[in-house]
Length: 226
Image (cartoon, rainbow, N blue to C red; front, side, top):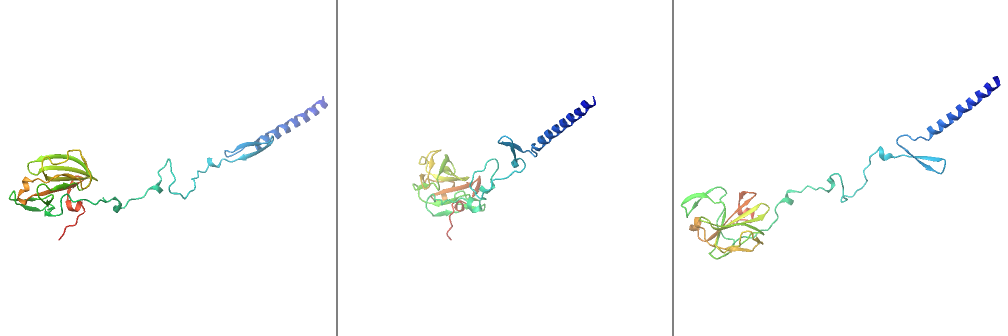
């Protein structure tokens, strides 16, 4: 009995050693920090670290025109200067360059026809009945109508918020409402203006930008002669 117990202890010790060796092998082959094991051959292993799981890196580039997705790319944004946003157009005069009555800029001026003092919100170009009236710039005719004070009126949207009101045209001589016009194109012929008949034949134009009445010559970029 003692002999069998002796050999039994030996077998137990050998068994414990075998288990310890197996556990040590498993621990040595277990990756840490999110690594993965790739088998090379039958018994050799290497650990490949997935560093992208821990560090976010941005692509290195000096280019400014590459397409960027997912986030706004401030490199492609340039701030416009006031000069770049100004209206850069060379406007045409609607009928000659002889101004018989200027814009009063809110000041009261005497009306020969009405015999009173009133503001003059436009500029009057002298001429003769039948003279050609031209568009100051390309645009779309938004309204044509006969007015008891201003004669036949043509309103044209010239873009950039500019609306020009051409007053004193001859009834029936104008292009129709909705017509597209080009710069310098004939939109009608000169007629008369009942409310300003005492000033002779002339074309009266008024200009508003974004709904606000402005100095017509200034809006057209024209310099007044002294």
